[in-house]
Image 1: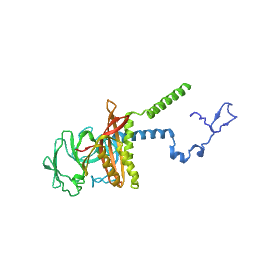
Image 2 (image 1 turned 180 degrees about the horizontal axis):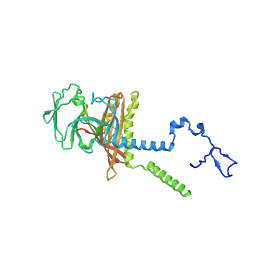
Image 3 (image 1 turned 90 degrees about the vertical axis):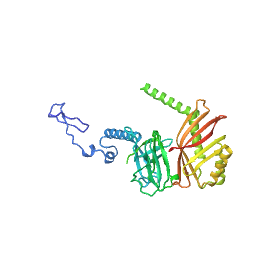
Image 4 (image 1 turned 120 degrees about the vertical axis):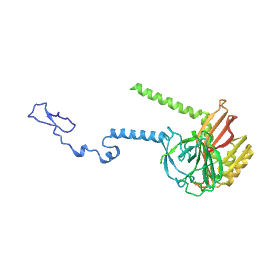
Length: 197
Length: 165
């Protein structure tokens, strides 16, 4: 037999039973027991659980976007047509924990800090020599296949040798004049991570 | 309960005292950081700024540099420029303030390291310069050397840093 539940609702005392005996005749009042819909919308049916969920969500977001994925907004034309001004993306800081940056990776290179960064593609690895002839890219005097370069290019430059700690980075928009396009050798410690999307 | 309240009040008083201490006796790093922010504000002017206002800004601008200061600029698309001494910097500053349509300078990610003698300091930052419309901007990393003379800090050397070599 289930135990009687004593609630704050009205009780009726039955005189036919023993004087101390009471049983609950309270009818569940639907209007009273259910919280207002606005309250449900704002803090849920169980505020304590909602608070825990919010706390966990905030903590997860903080850790994710502070230490793992760095949100960025793309500005400039040097990575066209792969990326355009106004696009939102993330930088994966953990991308190079287990291996070094690879050729073809789109990476972010920091200036003094991480408020503003360069977004470039790696075309030359440490120890390699990069040059541009007739708009084609050559790595160690071998032509490099670059399907991501869509615009015509007439660059003539190099050869430029990377040291053991440097990666040669350049944007995908090679239609810009060579001297106006920010590109060159980036030190490994300046590379923050790889673009996520 | 009273003890808890007293402890909380004590912690609040200690925190307030620390905060007031940093306000009244700021660290050298903070002083130079404020100077850098003030320099950025001085070099910023809108398109509607009058000639008088621009001249006043140019005059204030030169006040940040020591008499033997040097500026080395190597900017993509603009080439290399060197300005030596206050007069040369003043002249270049006057030209810039007079001819540019508008200028917005902001120093980001500023880090200051004070020398062991407490009379010299190095500051690094990312400089974002917007000339005219918002679309026409440049970003460069810069390094500043500061020196304390007569209880005030002056820039002795400012140079661009090549992020990509």
